[in-house]
Length: 314
Image (tube, rainbow, N blue to C red; front, top):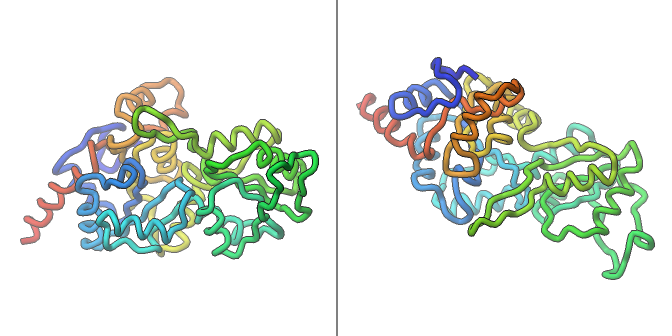
């Protein structure tokens, strides 16, 4: 975690240091929630940062563990919040990458039982992945419900309509050792306003892991597969020329570390610099993979660096 300019891990950087980093990197990967926006509000300056990078010929992609909406809905959200130059091809969600994994990597030979929302199902359907249709009677139980004979994979994502019956059916399918067990991501929770929390996909996956006695293969961050999806769709991606920008140490920074990327923590989301410093000072070397190379208060800190670059070119 030395970083490109000799800074120690977790180094807070500003103006000239950011400018040097922007010049050195060709590929920028951004998380969305907590980095680009909060809910329906864009982070101040984020749209200008993204457009400035694209205008300078940099490659920009968005990597999100949020599996609740298909990519086309993300394009609409970006546009709605003022990001007018973001294209579908720049968006890599855990639901989209899960569809690619099932279609192109394992070539699933049967149906997929999905614990997840409509957005996840739509991504699978667009990739031609057959899903088990939910058609149970409201009073059905695991004792008398129908089970599909052709389920070859169970995929767990965020599901705000999770039921005990879904958990029980998935456990039954996973009794077959040939049935794949996949999770879109392992995010444990997400912050809500007023100090409330929303349980994430990882909490549902954990329940099914206990019930089935099996461990899920995670598709989204911090797994490398998301970066492999990007590398397969953008030619000549060099990890040394990439910067991963995120707000969560346990997903975004670990993802960057797993993929050999320099990492930057922005303090507009979940994790704070004190947590990163604790990991940096930890005696457990595995915690060092959670430490960012660089820290900024917000990605709007890029803007003065762009102004300096513009002045140099004039």
